[in-house]
Length: 448
Ligand SMILES: Cc1cc2nc3c(=O)[nH]c(=O)nc-3n(C[C@H](O)[C@H](O)[C@H](O)COP(=O)(O)OP(=O)(O)OC[C@H]3O[C@@H](n4cnc5c(N)ncnc54)[C@H](O)[C@@H]3O)c2cc1C
Image 1: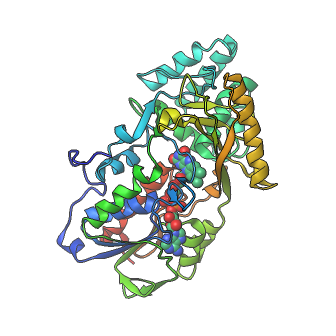
Image 2 (image 1 turned 30 degrees about the horizontal axis):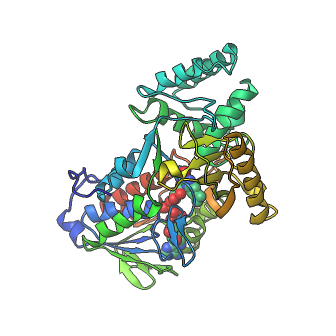
Image 3 (image 1 turned 90 degrees about the vertical axis):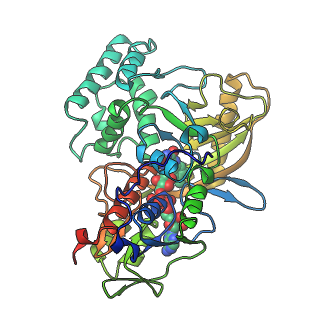
């Protein structure tokens, strides 16, 4: 982590005003959305208290420390287009270039087969990479590029009822299984047949035409706690904000023009907790909002850490896998200096979890054994540990109705599932956190 960078522009876009200085704000939940909101509100000059029910901050992107083990709750990746997340990291003193490994977008397998972009303009690099990929017949490559051009001509927008599978219909099975479906499941954590094409196109748009480096993969080299939450807590506390851990908020009640959080009065509140908890707290005051939050379906992600001492990926730290359960594997020798340790990630893993974790883990181990054999490794892989997050993300399906940012007067929601253009990602969470802070810091924008 690097401190002492030049001070970035404030997230909320305005500095302390006399009226803000006497106002108080509560943030309920300290995932990336809650931390973004708390930083924004502190910058705007409010006196901020963060309530987090867990002993550690970070929510669904956290480092867990127990007597037996220290590790993340699952492998995460960012892309260069995640500007709000990168800005927030800089704001609290983390240098993204030190904690993230930047690599060109690659959907190659462990043998270096498949699509890989080169540096430079992402749209051109994508077209070059597709044209150069001789494993796909020329007609298929041209069909893909012409389909991408058609998406661009539509402004990367489409009917909200369209699924990714339908969006890609007519393209060859190889294009779908080696490129579009892995991209879809990695970005939306939702299988292509039910995933929202309009959200998928938005992610593609930001990666391909968002500017230099937007399509790059940014892979954490440090535990998730060091990527943002630890530095954000330090930043907040050193500016007088209170961060209270192991504090599950039980009740939210109206108090004059503001709110009482478990009996403590605040002028404004940002609810940045999980959808079910937010629905529970909001239901007495905004039942329609609570129904939308409660109605979201979720998808699981299984991350299995496999040790195989003499194995390593030669081409890229991340490899696409052909069979299931995992769609990608990450070489932590390359990423975090732990040679022989690999994270196998199975997104949208619900169907693999029907017979329980042990069965799913055994299936990943079989996948790892087959993979490492083809890589020439002689050691026998073993599972170090697995984490299955049953409610990793909301299912980003077609025609999805997400709850809006405003719950009630002086009561704002910030979390990845709040309405917005992004799927359930760190970037979606941070953008919604910044937006909630901006709204909560500006009472005039929220007349009762
Ligand atoms: C295994 C896994 C892999 C993922 N991979 C990626 C990836 O590669 N790239 C990517 O961009 N995204 C990924 N995601 C998604 C990403 O982690 C989430 O979108 C993001 O962390 C959501 O942040 P959030 O702040 O909206 O919510 P959360 O992180 O869920 O934060 C909510 C917080 O509220 C707290 N809380 C709940 N109830 C209360 C209460 N009553 N009182 C006080 N506190 C409360 C919770 O403890 C939690 O800390 C992944 C998620 C998982 C689980």
